[in-house]
Each structure stands twice: as structure tokens, then as C-alpha cells.
Length: 389
Image (cartoon, rainbow, N blue to C red; front, side, top):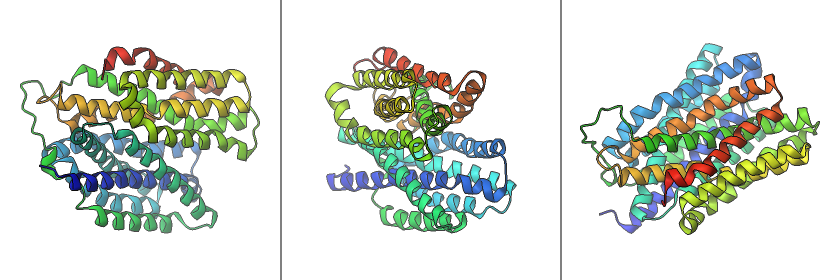
């Protein structure tokens, strides 16, 4: 039996894992302009290069879910942290454009291994605790992303090379990985061998739909991070500083709401919370866009952050719960998380180019009604899909 002291240690280790993963991604994102300048590549070629990381992320999902199901999410999270030590410094070396492509694929792959494993571990902790804790874990990821981005910005300002920066991050990962390696839940806590007569590629329809909810949330998050500053600056002539405010305030709202998301889910239920989250995100973004000025962008991004913050954590929480109850014996929690996050994370891949294409056809302001519409679809269908969960 998994003791309470072990649970507390595993919870702390998983919180740190989310913080570490977010910190790693935030550090990487903060140096993208430097990668572009050092390699002397165009915006389009940079976008194509970054797609290699997305391919790595999606490639890792299925094998990692199988490993987490076979050996348990605790061991895969532990070893996943050590794989990050390999992935991060490789990107910083920047030997050539071809090296950049390969290293981005590896970085995306190992980051996904760690990400999926820690989400499966968080799902196992929820199942053990019999209460919602997923939102706090994702709040730690957001905090990690903010801190990694901020520190990366400082490094860039002092002209510290991406290579040296990446090696510093690698050392931090190494220290954290060794410190927490024995704190996670044992593999026996959620090891799962699937015994089913169903075809291997057949997956419960409800999980696919939940993944589509996550996809909508991912497109909303990607839209906020990629296009807020562009919309404020190019459409409404905001100053460089003011143009950063939409995403900064969006991120602050994401962290704030995620910290209270578990309490809200326990208090009102996931179906109701998803309904209100979609309504706030979609309605708030439409309101902001309708105002037609930079203050509207700021208001829209604040409400978008408040609404979309809980969508992906709630979706992951529900899919883990369904794997342990309704679909027990058909699909493990780790495979369930991989399936749903795989569909959801595809939103981060297709969202930026989709909105960019629409913006070229019409305007960026009009294109931003797409994520608003997706959020409202979540609001209108959440109760039917999730039920009384």
C-alpha cells in the first residue's frame, strides 16, 4: 500500500517535474530570436525548423504511454527528467541548420516523454488521493514557463550565448533530477497491462472528444502567446512595451486560475466548470475584439486566460479518471493521457499556421474569432460530453 508520506513526496516531486518542464520550455522559447539570428534564417524557415520539435513531441506520445503503462508513470517520469539533460544542450550547440533540425526533434521528443509521464503520474496521484489536484500541477508548469522565459530574457540581454544558457539549464535539470529521483510513486502504483479483445487501434470515442476539447484549448493558448503582441502592435499601433501586456496578463491569469482550479472543480464539478470556462474564454475574447482598440486586446486576453486556464488540466483529469473506472481493462491511464494529450497538443502544431493563413486572407483581428468560437463550442457541449463528472 502506498503510504501517506510517500504520497506527499510523490506530490512534491510531480509539482517540481511540472515546474522543471515548463522552465525548460520557457528557456527554449526565450532564445528563439537568437537561434534565428545566429543561423541567419528567414521567418518561414524558422517556422519550418520549429515544426521539427512538434514532430518530436507527437512521435514520443505512443511509445511513452506504452512504457508508462508497463513500468508505471513514476519510473518513466524519473528517467524522463534525465532525458531532458540530453535534449536541452543539443539545441544550444547550433553547429548548423541541419543540426538545429535534428536537435529540435530530439528536444521535442524528450520533452514529450517527460511531459506525458508527469501527467500520467499526476493522474495516478489524483486517483490515489480521490480528489482533484491536476490544475495545481499545470499551474506549476505555467510558473516554470514564466520563470524560464524571464531568466532566458536576462541571459539574452547580457548576451550570454544560447550554448552557455542551455548548459546552465542542463545542470539545473541534472540537480533536480537527482534530488527527486526516489520521490515518485513506485511503478506498482499504476502499472497496467491491458487485457482486451478489442483491436489495438480502437479507442473509446469519449476520449477522442475530450482530446478535441483539449485541442480547442491548445489553439486558444497558442493564439494568445503567438498573436497577442502582433495584434496589439500592428493592428492598433501599440508601443513595444504595451504590446507585451496582453500575453503577460494572460499568463498571470492562467497561473492564478490554475492555482484555484482544483477547488473550483471539486466545488462545482468538471462539466459546469468547463462550461463556464469556455463561456468566459470565448465571450471575453469576442468582447475584447469587438472593442476595436488595444485596451480591448488586453481585456480579451485577460478573460481568455481566465477561461482557458483549466481546460487542458480538466481534460487530462477526466481522461485519467475514465481510464480507471469506465474503461478499466481496455486502456491504461497513461495510454488515456497520451491519447487525449496527443489530440490536444496537435492544436499547438496547427494553431499558429492556421490563424496566420486566415489572417492573410482577411485580417488578424477577424482570425482571432476562431479560438473564440472553439471556446464557445466547449461551453455548449461540455455537459453533454462530460456528464456529471
